[in-house]
Image (cartoon, rainbow, N blue to C red; front, side, top):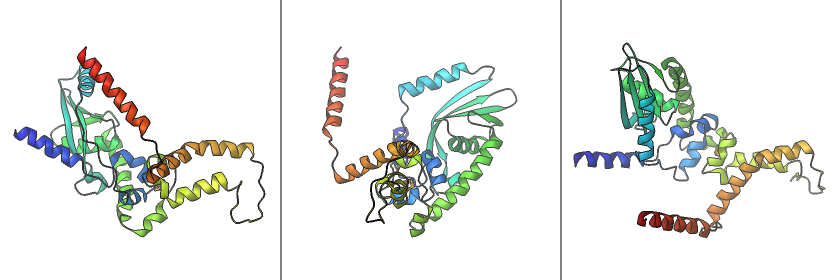
Length: 263
Ligand code: SF4
């Protein structure tokens, strides 16, 4: 009973909204103001981690494939203090950990295989184990990487609830997953300037259409996924998305599952 209660409490904690999500490190290290803008949208709720049969099977398969170890311990759904790296108090992440003991040293693997998670796991398990390697780099490499994360996180945290966040927006491919893409001033300016700018100079009332050049069309093509993602978000906000196909797909999936269960 106590075990179940602690699992439920853990699930609630995991469902909290973390300001600097480890999964989005490439985005907020490049666009420091992104977490601030996303937070004003309500943030991204962290998924409640689950140990599915597939994940269990993968961990067991990995354990069986390790040669020459004295022992291999699978530690499922370990809570990791990523806040110690990002500086965000109480920020916790979850990962499956494999602790591999050899005769004179140990190795550590984290799943999902991520450097921030590995560093947090290294901090947690190094007190009792002489860990000399991980599945995403050596301890030395992870410490150097951790310093970069801490510096990027410090800037992002300083921009929390600050109007200066707008001065630290840097568009990139990661804008596709940004909750604020539909209203981001830098992304709007970037798309307009790079895509529509040469074709439609707003400041010139007598502008005549120009012939798009091959290079320009290539550049527009590169921006298409970003524009499509932006359009999708705008449609979502305006309630213009047709939900019926998704609902139909869900119903079909349920019907298939029922049929499978009956067989
Ligand atoms: S849309 Fe892009 S530039 Fe704007 S906040 Fe999001 S990630 Fe940053």
